[in-house]
Length: 117
Image (cartoon, rainbow, N blue to C red):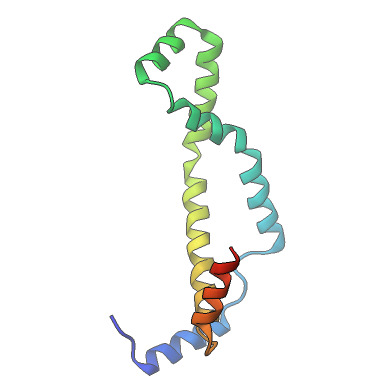
């Protein structure tokens, strides 16, 4: 779907009027939540490295392990945070692309960034 020049101009005008979506405090809170759940994320992924039957047997036989698995489940249930973070990253990508589109050398700037990554 292509946009007319008027639609592009209207989109840029809307973007230029847009204030920040996050405060620095919001950013720090998001980062802190992300870092604080590192062990839980890793444990949730580690859980998936065992065959389910083996995992289930360990849960049946070892109450402490079962409690740990319950804690991992609670972390995994917080996946909505990751969906929200993914949405924020998509928005950041869109904002960056829109800003880069203002440059005549956008393609070269992106190529330079990719080469440096």
